[in-house]
Length: 111
Image 1 (cartoon, rainbow, N blue to C red):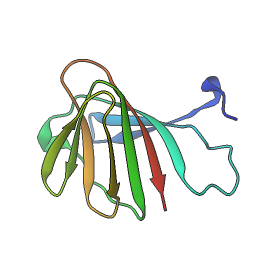
Image 2 (image 1 turned 60 degrees about the vertical axis):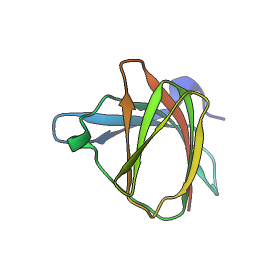
Image 3 (image 1 turned 135 degrees about the horizontal axis):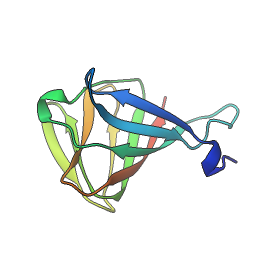
């Protein structure tokens, strides 16, 4: 169990001056994890500042609120509240909030 007050908050830097998103680990206390789960909060980021990354395994995103721009293969797909996506995380990908409303999602990564 991880209480809200005990979550570890992990920022990711899109550039030296802005943060693209923050992740809060929802399962850092679990031993022998088979996947990692995060609550992500996305910021509005200029398209030119989107930081693409990749990692082994798969990734699942479920948008809790707002609009999320997901970049994969140099193409943006906009996900709305209630939308989800599952993809191969070895593809370079990145995120940004679309619009002014807050944007949060559950992110699950699986090695």
